Length: 268
Image 1 (cartoon, one colour):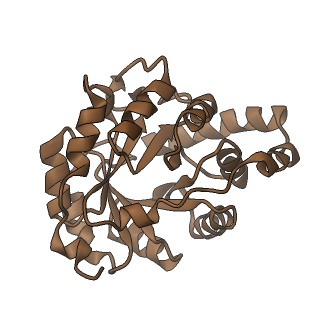
Image 2 (tube, rainbow, N blue to C red; image 1 turned 135 degrees about the vertical axis):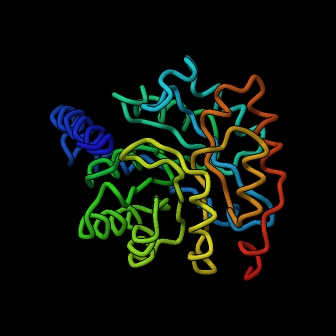
Image 3 (cartoon, rainbow, N blue to C red; image 1 turned 30 degrees about the vertical axis):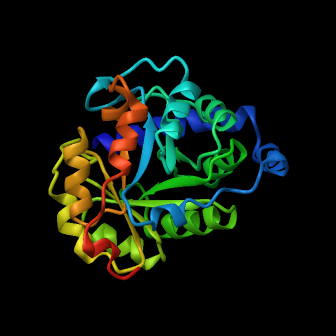
């Protein structure tokens, strides 16, 4: 069993517990009290590198990263630095996240929010929207074609912008086949947790004009963000480098000021 398989098994166990406590119909009813989803795409299509700043306490590959006793305070710093979106990890077992973090961040900032989790069911998308998320992550490696298609359509129907994550060319083909408009290229292989920083550079030329490209993982600081920008990234999703930084506001602002490569912006 791969690391990804183990994570998803735990996600499904935790999900069963939440569904037992809060039935699907109750989660649907909560949507009536949620503001319309914010659209991050205009910012992602801007002339400078966008930053998706992540609230991330730990990871399976690195262990504990930061305590983050107040995720709302961290998110406020990200927003002050100009983050175009904020990613909130809600997976419990491997990342020490929770939906409570998402609710807390939503109450603190007006920035578009991404629910970062291993989403495998409609219930999780409804949870995300009920908690105020504006974006949701779908990982191609975690889903078969039918589930990927159905969840993508469901998310869009809820008003969510979908970040579709890929790791190689076949996964990119599957993402494009469902009409993905926001594609994340993750340099980390979720089956082994190994990082290949060259992954984005290999896949970026295969992404059609008009599809927004997000570079994920392997970003330890400004130099890495600059390299990804030069390779055509429209945005970077950064967690560890920000939560461990003593001044996350300034770190976000520095990355966000980078210009992006002509491959990404030439058609705009």
